[in-house]
Image (cartoon, rainbow, N blue to C red; front, side, top):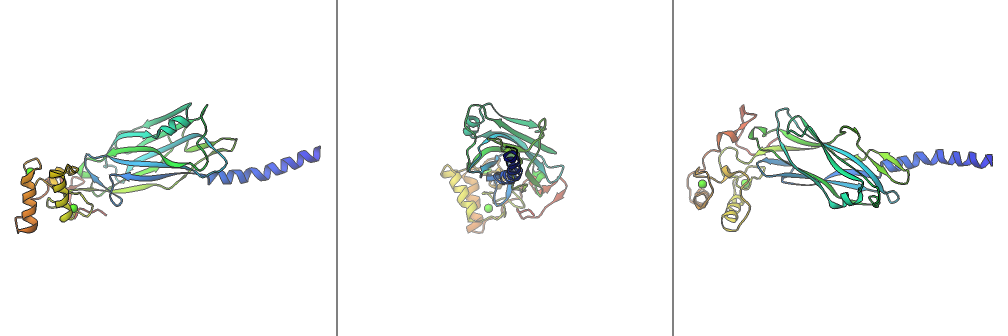
Length: 283
Ligand SMILES: [Ca+2]
Ligand SMILES: [Ca+2]
């Protein structure tokens, strides 16, 4: 009998580290798609940028019974500002973590660092199943101040009070482990209008080309999306976009008409101090 107990203890001591090592590699949090960003760059406008966050349970054995993940938004410069406009989660998160599923907000004031925590645990529901992988949460924000151009905004993992944890917990006694995280993710901020007007489609290169004309035609005649920055298409500086602006752009592009006027002053200044080049791109 004593021999059998010793063997069991020995096996347990050998197996537990294996289980722990496996569990640490069985969970991952990653940034999924980002709407409102273009080639890793975010235009400064009133339009929302949404970070979709994917969670993956790579385990084929263990279900997730508790989550405790935090996310931090910060600027590359203390002067960078933003507005967190929305957070949310798939309904399945509420269904699975039926005892509690909640967001916690800490200093979400759009400066310094904003932290958004996500917590949940299971009581009656089934755990997050093995091999689950889908978008779980999202965080939306806007960056509206033209002075942010040339800087970056970043999404990273973060511990958050009061739990101070960045963990998730497996069922069947497998323990709690920090998930893998593929961040931080940083995005250059740029103004749609730099130099002269005409970057109607707000592409990060700042080019004025046929794509901008197509965009403007689609907006005026086809119910297409409005320009993210009205100044890019308001060629007669009337304060609105209409057929007059379209005619101006056509004449400029095809019949030697006058060049578009400069962008409004606010959109030609970075950091409120230093004029930046005519290129809409950022470093
Ligand atoms: Ca363009
Ligand atoms: Ca106009």
